[in-house]
Image (cartoon, rainbow, N blue to C red; front, side, top):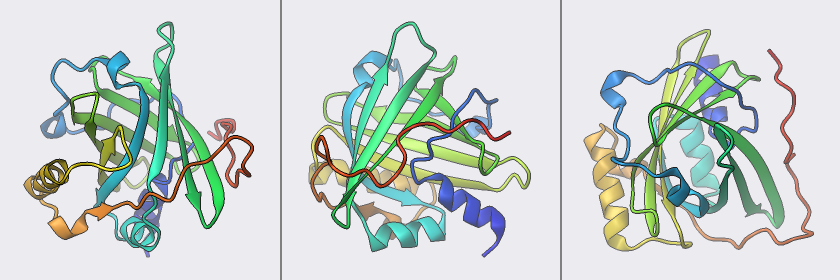
Length: 208
């Protein structure tokens, strides 16, 4: 497998490295939620479905399609927010924390994966805040400029209605991806206080 493809696949495993980065999003993909309100988007979400152009990511996700619990926290005095992600995999609790930098475009965020030298551009494509949301992620490796995209469907509960899931599949098709690329996650429970954590929850120092 080519290094660029491998790196792009690794990036979407809740990478905890982050810092301010420049824009990498092509203009024709600038489709953020209209009148986005950050404060309403914060709080608890569940990642209930995904679709990606990365074969490695797709294969890995299909092998263990676990629902990810997300907690988004923003302090009004800061220009970023924290996304804490957790899931129960093989009986163990896995947790990570990623800081997303805000931009001048509401609903559009950045984080940088220093370990792989890649920028990740995240966009809230659509949301009604109290039920579901669709996220678009574009990852660009700086050295090779290899790009990978992923769509994620968030829900305030552990599942979504058939209508919302069908809308997500329609969106995927509109952006040139086959409906079969959609992976619906399975809820396996949540991490409880005091459970063993099998991944680091703190952010390492920037390696660049």
